[in-house]
Length: 122
Image 1: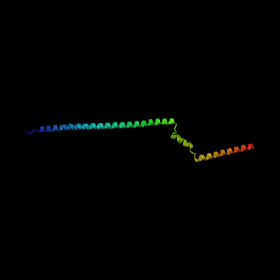
Image 2: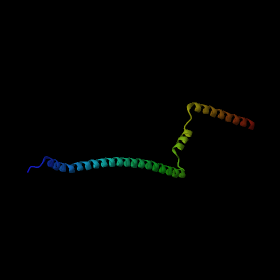
Image 3: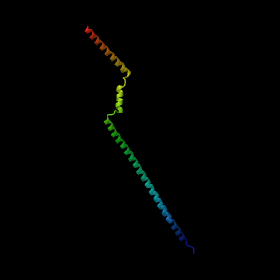
Image 4: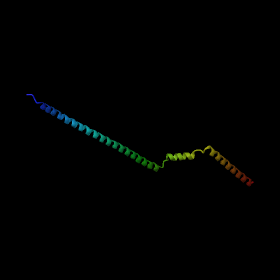
């Protein structure tokens, strides 16, 4: 006996019902995976940023403690060396000429006083 058309439709519907459910479950699973991926990306970004901040803080702590230790040793700093070099550097030419004139004037004064001392002794 031939089956009525509606029974074939019903049988076909029964075959597609699990496929629809599988497609629906698959779509839900994909959506959950995408949400989890976004959340994981956010968490990873926060962890990287936190690690960067902690690394910078650790560097500051180490630098400050090392500076304190070096200061306790009495070592010369780069700024100290620069200041010392400035003091030891010869004066510019203009100042050198003035210093020579002053030195010559002092020598002349020293000679005069020696001469006058010698004249007194006679």
